Image 1 (spheres, rainbow, N blue to C red):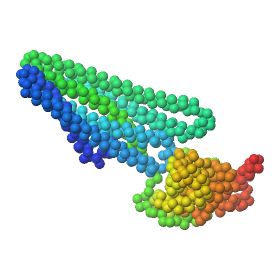
Image 2 (cartoon, one colour):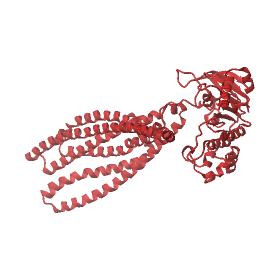
Image 3 (cartoon, rainbow, N blue to C red):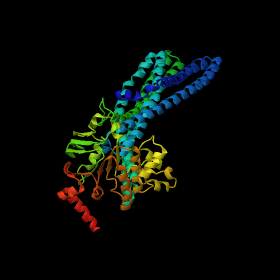
Image 4 (cartoon, rainbow, N blue to C red):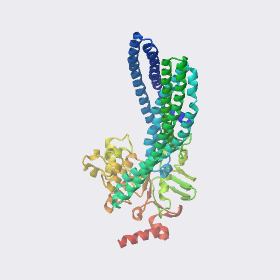
Length: 577
């Protein structure tokens, strides 16, 4: 119930509309309850007493009742649907905002398709519990209560006979409801996994085709599709069992009532019209109970989706601002790593007591074998992750003591894998600073050696790039990313192997843009090709998460250590080629 009340908390802002919808529901349910009473009058006063005036009155009242019922049913349906759609928007907004606040570790541990399923499939299932089924629950509940009240008014003894079946019905609903909820969780998990497989296949279409793995991926999708089918069929089986069991128990109760009521009519204790009306109300009880069991089953399944959604909303935010966090003022760009330690998991330490200082405007290259911790430094500086030991300072400010926006607003990143959005070239560059003018966007593109090729595109700056910028080459994507970084105008720049995936000609053009971008900024260059960092002011050589060598290119070659070894390997490879 606590989970369901939490779901209903999203309805609270729309209390006025909900109240109006409930009033409409009550009126519509009241119209349904009035019809059996009309049947009583038809039998006792029209058929028995031959009352023509009453017949006319009843005929007119039936027409009026259905008109009124139709009006209130429309009001109930429209208002509840409006609230339902608003609730979906609100829940999706909350979970999307939560996803924006979660650290990169969350994205490392969860598949993209699973995360997408939280926002789409699970929230849609929650709407069923909060609104659609809630309306049915209120409607059928009112009919149930009203029918019981009318039955008590007609004959309390018959009503007691009817109540004998209630404990059995409630036990069935509870027993099956728990099973349906557990299975609902399996269904949502299977749906999320299916979405994940689909997303992965769509985003990796080029790789799949290059390795001729279409059949393999189809089999994988079919397997997951079958898992989803079995989970849904298990739920259908439970629902299919629940309904006939409840109907049988209710039928036994109605049979007992009919037998006892028939004896009462024969004995003259109750009129035939009253018995017919009573049986109609008894059926009215059976139908709501049957529908309520289905509603309860649907709500249990939807609550399983709610468990998943609130599980994400309740996740702790690893990267938190302190309550008294300061806004980082415009910085000069001095960066200090002070005995920094970091691990992605407790079993393996990636950085082990790393200390170094970079002065404003310096270009510092970071090199080392794979797994040495180079890219980790690029993730720690803008606080995508928090250090597990030591501290990082910018101009003397610990990055833990300043707001995330003010920190990341002064750090620019050009990664190896350029991420462009499915929009125009202009919008992708503008992403660097949304309030920039057209002239500033064009100037950034020129500085990134991108203006010329952009103007040659079919629609120039208005050309749509497609998903992840698939419509242009890798070098062109990288230059747009550089233009975006130039427009942001950060004081601290991180280049994470920004040219390693490019051909020689593209690398030359991109490197010219990068050299222009680094002027006057504190720059960190994480490099695989050592030939690109010869002119760096300082080179940091990492191995197993520790700083093993520091110096310029010539100094490190003279030391004949790890850097010289790595450089000689690359030089020999180049000579061999």
